[in-house]
Length: 107
Image (cartoon, rainbow, N blue to C red):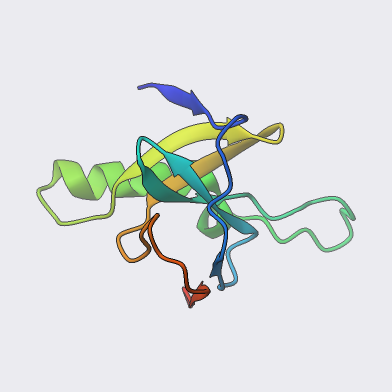
């Protein structure tokens, strides 16, 4: 398993992702758009909102397990960005040539 360093990945402008599973960011990687998903913060430690459902590692492993069973899934990479472990999901909707503002909801 290779862990990708996304530190120098350029942001793909004009693409924004909704959803409740933590912060997301569109970046360019290998000539395509990838959605970087960050873990939810545990900064306040009063009511931390982190669980297996918001963990980038869990999403990566879950997708790879489904893939190994022959079930269709999205492409995922495990990596780091901004000092955090992240999962990168290949964006199968956005295009790097898109000039329009795109908002994609994942609820």
